[in-house]
Length: 133
Figure 1: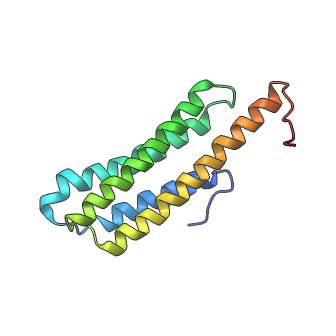
Figure 2: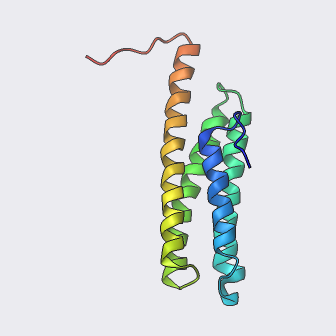
């Protein structure tokens, strides 16, 4: 499926992460399906939801950054739960590694998006960014 040009790269990566986690946990042991698997999948869905909501809000809206920050927190929690899933053999080590790579990319692009918003917000409010000397 082609990537829509209108999607931010962090949102595209979050969707990719969500899809991967859902597919990776399909064959997890039954005893973990209603605990670890559900939690892992819900974190992914919540991350994507928070990013989409943040993107819908205007740049000046203070809630925009709150949703971005919440998505960042959820990304970190996802990493911890993925590790627990691997340690309990709910997911394979290779799946954990792939989740961590996608998670790291999301965190990096989220940080860039937040920095870009701050910069754009300064410029739109009349403050000119100063050069470092």
